Amino acid sequence: MDKNISFTLKVWRQRGPKAKGAFETYKMNDIPGDTSFLEMLDILNEQLVNENKEPVAFDHDCREGICGMCSLYVNGHPHGPATGATTCQLYMRRFKDGDTITVEPWRSAGFPVIRDLMVDRTAFDKIQQAGGYVSINTGGIPDANAIPIGKDIAEEAMDAAACIGCGACVAACKNGSAMLFVSAKVSQFALLPQGKVEAKKRVKAMVAKMDELGFGNCTNTRACEAECPKCVSISNIARLNREFIKAKLKD
Image (cartoon, rainbow, N blue to C red; front, side):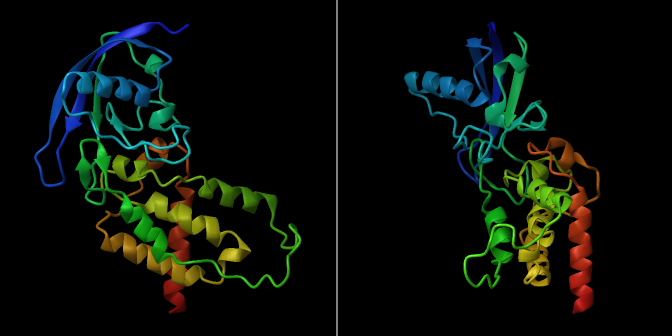
């Protein structure tokens, strides 16, 4: 059984996008080690409400490592110190009794702070929308294996599709680049025959929208790959560059 720990929590508080933010310090006592990080924040908020204080705003949804909403910077790492895991999959047993834990929102021009630990990540939605749709004439109901796809190609496409759009790659990058996210979304279609029809239009539109929204350039430091909770590979960035160059040469 995990033992209880007590620690100091430094949390970024900011009332709105234009407001000046600052860290506030809270003492957390006797938190069970099997408590998830988000459950620990729930406990903090219950304490604050009981003291007639404003609870900390933070994003969450599934709490199962699927949706990517739990976008928190914990002790200098997007999603915290656990490798290949989201914040909701981080447990307090990772920390030691007496630790100081610092919690911040994503830091990126592309993700403005809404309040406290919540940021506006609709920029990712806009990039995906710019990619458009996939059109394919299937005729009648096709057999599941009617389009032969090599196992290695299918697995690469699935690995790219594992990206949950949480934004950890942007938060980890010193340039605030969204290249890992965009390349994963381009790759999951570029690798499959269903995505070939709009391939050139898609890659140009998504890259243009990414640049328009103020994300930085990629300098291949691999920080994005190291912090990605789904371990998406930067090989997708190389594929994105190839797809983009081919599309521009076609023009």
